[in-house]
Image (cartoon, rainbow, N blue to C red; front, side, top):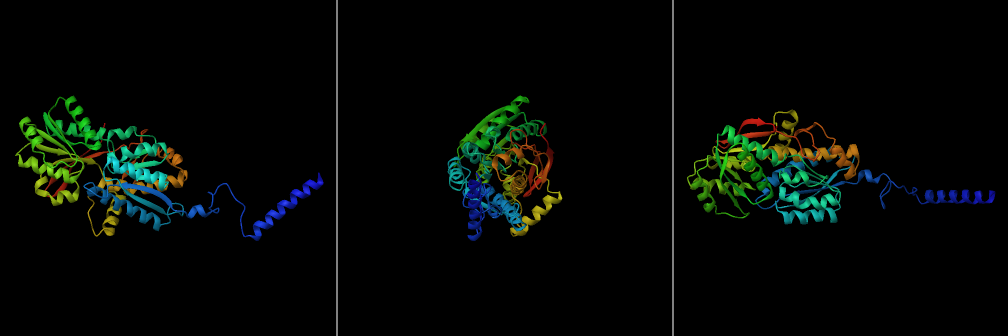
Length: 395
């Protein structure tokens, strides 16, 4: 027995000398294969970012990207995430399901990301969500609002409220404030716009109103004379316009004006883009829009706006609430990883506990479906500017 003990001791001593001689440290189970202990703390945190960077959707995708890049630059310059920098892999979802699906495949299967921030359009999120969910990849969108995203999966979050709320508020405002008893709805055949259309018409009819025309057009259509002839015949009090992109929306308004339709115009958050309104002041005069509320008066918001303008040649924020959302999401992920660890399941579980997390986007609380509780702002487009009329919190 004593001989066996001496043999074991001798082997341990020889092994230790070997590691010291070679300048190696004994392996540890905490470090990934091929990475020395402690090195993981300096490995960049890889994050996928999907936005419409080309096509008509780039009108809001590019400004939102700039807001996200600002956050990345700030975080990396100030020490990163526990010493790790963000490494962002930008992908072009093109506001299109097919492109978004391909981009998600690359991010998950090739780049091996654990987190995706983006999906500006609902079609991007809905196309990529099944793979993200099955791969346990955490996804947070700054602006996708389709009601279908509520049930897209446990790993799918967003910081923009669902159109289940926006459509209801639009219906209430049309019926109660605009005093419309009849409406016509003209909508693009996309996930985002059809979600709004469905909720709006249900609530408007429920209030006692009547939908006298309900016209849907396809992506890429440029001639809406047939739809507006039906709208003109229906003689609605209000026309609710639901384009996917500003380019499509501007065509709608122009052709509606050409038809001499005098009904009041109501729309969602796409057309009230500040640069869009400024460049098309006469065409958009008097249009009423509804978008998620962004309180630009808080110190955090003012600092963000100032930093954004400094970084982007004094450029105004085209879509303030969505840009503030995306900027804040990188800080949210930073806090989540530092708190829960670099594990998508743990980060997911932590996000469901978030209550009144305060940042540039305001005060964030997620419900049990990963949706935020948020307020909306009613806007009127006057003289090339966006004029706030009132702030509404869904009941």
